[in-house]
Length: 423
Ligand code: AMP
Ligand code: MG
Image 1: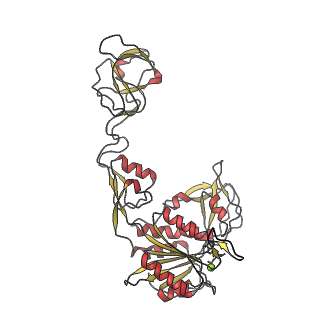
Image 2: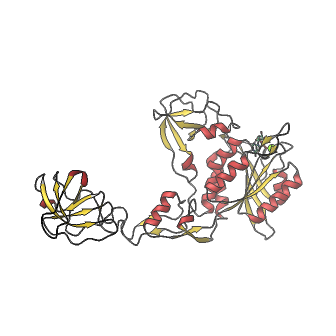
Image 3: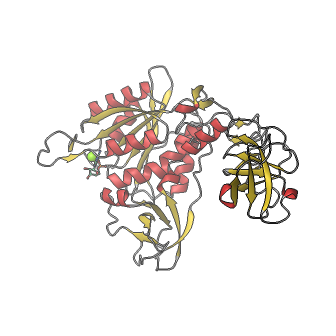
């Protein structure tokens, strides 16, 4: 990242891809190399620093998928065959080798006794009383089984030695379960990125405070803090900073002293009340970009010098609530991934069918708030305004629409589910 002169709002628009590649390039120099071991219990949303390899087969041995009878297929040539039941194997116990002509009563998850090659579910069996010593009962098998039926094979989920989770992956609940299933109780993860966050704007009040004339509640503080937490960051919340140059400069210094990344919202346009640009110029450096996206557009990127001689990354998001949320998802998430040593790209968009018409697209690339309707098509939130937070709550995701492209019902569009954007 090289210091370049600030741009004005009238400078040519920069593509999102170009902006993201510059952000990512700047972030690479700040990639976090510290890792830590965490309990798999506490690994949600953390980014793996090491692969997880399985030292065992999962399942460890063949086991039954159902409650029923384990037997040899050769012993049931026709429906109605009757076998002696020689043993009872609940889950967690290991039975004896199965003698020919006998069956074992088994319960879901029980290991298959050696010699058995199928399980017949109990609904297809009739339990009969014992007839001889040494039998615990008899069973009439009502259907001819096939080899392997209702048996979960040793290693069918995971083979011993296989890599089950890769470094750079953000831990989901499923991934936590996967790690546990191969016996990994501790995981090596990247230290959480420390992100200091503040909002600017004299109009901002906090929920719980009375709303004075001209004021609005600070929603971005909540959204951005939540997004940071969902992305596995340590969010350092510095609250609201008034629209004053000194206060903004001080807040930037305080933020940088504690954080890998300083994130602000609002005040990055070039109005008289937008103090981030002069403040950043005093304590660091920045580029002010106009990004060719809607919602979004103004985005600031730079760095804040720290007293220790280092510097923290700086990203300034627009103030409008939908703009700041969308910009976080499409531009800040790649930076967070790179800080954690992962690849910048998120999951790929999904091709979906539009169930609406969008005849008058913006010239800028649009991120339209949409959701999946019952017919499998996407519907659009009627008000796509950059301040309409309702659209973000209503939506399942964003349609990534190239600038100037009208959409007609039935067209294929690129859809980014919100959950994928946060991975
Ligand atoms: P700005 O980027 O500061 O010019 O703000 C653009 C718009 O976003 C204005 O309408 C602000 O009132 C609004 N805004 C700025 N910050 C926030 C915030 N933290 N929460 C909700 N709205 C905000
Ligand atoms: Mg403002």
